[in-house]
Amino acid sequence: MGKTRKVWSGRIEGAVSPLMERFSRSVETDFLMWREDISVNRVWAAELAEIGIYSADELKSVLAGIDKIAGELETGNFEFEPVDEDIHVAIERRLTEIVGDAGARIHTGRSRNDQVVTDSRLYLKGRAKDWQIELVRLQDNLLTMAKDQLGVILPGYTHWQQAQPILLSHYILAIFWGVDRTISRLKDYLHRIDVCPLGSGALAGSAFSVDRERIALKLGFREASQNSIDATGERDFCSELLFAIAAYFTHLSRIAAELQMWNSLEFSFIEFSDAYATGSSMMPQKKNPDAMELIRGKSAAAIAGVNQLLVLQKGLPLTYNRDLQEDKKVTFAQLEEAILATDVFREALSGATFRVDKMQQALEPGLLATDLADYLVQKGVPFRQAHEIIGQIVQRSLQEKCQLTAFTLEKFNEFSEFFEDDVFKKLQFPVSVAQRIVIGGTAEKAVQLQIAQAEDRLKAYQ
Ligand code: ARG
Image (cartoon, rainbow, N blue to C red):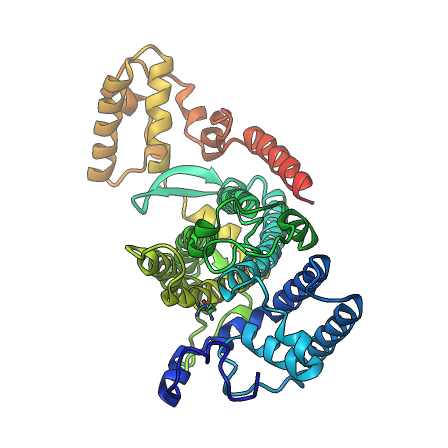
């Protein structure tokens, strides 16, 4: 193969337009998986020797050639030619330059269609595992934070209105379990992606009787794929990962949005360190929580990514179509963003200060209205009636600008004779929190159990 000849030149007589050449190149993206392509070439060469395509000597020189190419790629000394439309072609071209005819035999019985999905699966498997490790690190940090903040109470919100008091640790652990779902999704994903398509050929299976199970094993896959049509043409392994990324970013974007509000002057529940904030070019007083805003902003591309992959495949006839070359750019890029966002989020949060004083100041007595209703229930009043009575009390407290905590027993008794002296014990934030002792509740005892569960989960991962 000369430096200007395409791998498919036999059938096509005319020269390809330089514009088309540029349009169809994917090497800028698939370059990222050169290590995987090297591994695939090594295993494939050995397999060709098993079936007599290579003599022992030829195999030796081919493997040495592959090593030399790996060295060139590693050190940045590999010279790409305009003819190298993708990494597979580039490596085969160079191998043929180095070892001659033996290099020209490396593509025996295989197609770029099975090669590209084998490389992609290997690459994504590796990076998805790296992401999982970063997610576990984030969980580890969240758990430490939850333990450190045990006892701190802040207002919990629904509809962005003060609802009920909660423990800060409980809030932090809510993030932990959201991250945990991503980890468990990735675990399932890593099982499904662990299937080797090599040997599927272009679509019908290799005509050379390579041992596909041995190939799978050597490349570190769990098993060989069962259908060559499916294996070469499906991209669930991209869409599925992109869904995990989109769901993760969506989750993170909600937390980012809330923490960003917590960081405002009005809330001041949290202060990010200077390392994760930026100033304004115009307003000297500003310190902006950019890390959170960027996480929220980047979630847009993550959500678009899963859509892009689904739309790319929708209605596409089986098996390989060149459209599918567009799978890698978005999948690889989004995976990198997810890994980066995980690290940024972890560091930004670890370096932030929780303003416990501000959280305490923000606690409004109205947060205890449900506890007052529960109090009446314990005295025998049906909940619906209790709810009505407390609703009227709240109404009065607003009219008279008198906080619930400032009500006298006499005043309570105007609304119900079931109120007694012990009602004042109930009207305290720590008491409200301590009531919620059910599994998954915000009481300190329940949160301690939750921490133990989270610790077990982490141990299983580490
Ligand atoms: N660069 C291509 C891709 O990433 C490789 C497969 C090309 N196959 C083909 N039949 N043209 O999808």
